[in-house]
Image (cartoon, rainbow, N blue to C red; front, top):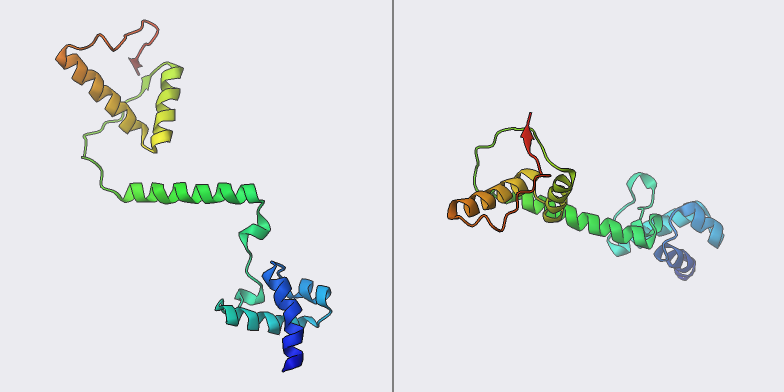
Length: 157
């Protein structure tokens, strides 16, 4: 048994350092590949990882991705989880929506899309909020703060 503990030590060291694959560890240590596979199973059982799927070692993202890509992937995962949580929340109210194609100036379109992206909201929600604010101000007679430029045309098709 002392011989086995002595042989498993270099396999454990390489395995824990992230070297995956019994063939690579076998080449590195000079221990037969079948013995290395047996040692890896023992190490995984000690760690509670269970057997390897299809006889292959698990792939760690740190071994596949560069550190900056791993950071980006984690940020993407967090964004996706927040998006999923947001979609699970009930909508504020059901509105009677209709499809309507309009033409707006490119800067307005880009600003609406940017705000929708920043808030992770739909373009419809951003437009309805802007239109609600416009008509609320118009009904109170406070239209001086809203400029109606002659270059900003809105036409329907």
